[in-house]
Length: 277
Image (cartoon, rainbow, N blue to C red; front, side, top):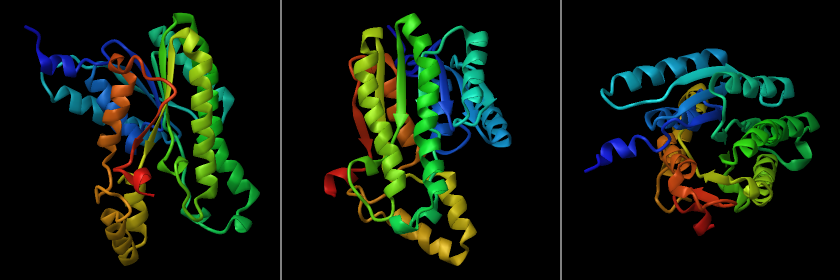
């Protein structure tokens, strides 16, 4: 008789995964959950201090949970918009593990300062948003996909946004970057299917990440009010925002063999937001 608890903690046993933007928020939650399910995870982030802290914390949590078989977790610095950085990360992972089974393109930026009319957006603001949110994913896919194709298996998961399904004022550039990533996902799902590579998009709704918390804290009393309004989430049918862990659990499922026939999909994890609007 098999142990269901052991099985559910081994969905990615012996898999090798790269998680970009893995030092905090959704990326951290994904990295920790992957490790707890047996994967060897490489956290990629531009913040070295946060990346090293994340690895130490994940290892500490894993060690404290007893007899389960967990994977490894290491940190590798990279600016996802820099091709040389991306190539080096991929080369390093191959030297250590010899393969890459899962790529989670989670790294992204969102500037509150860009919440303004389209005619007030500066060209360098547009370029930065597109570069991190879209080009960064492209670069990692460019260097990871050939390795997956050689092994004739792999999973690529792109973290997009609820805003690919509807419009909100002043989110234009962010929505464009994530919409482009969704289109890239669908095209690559068809292109790479011949190599048994699955490509899917996860579109989170409002999620309470450290980024939001830091923004609220920086605003003082106004931040407390903003946090309360954010948590109230009136436009979300479930009437609350998600935790990073709730998004991570869906990403784990898509990365696992339980989702072996899912490719080219956009999975909305948004509390029903896109259904309502």
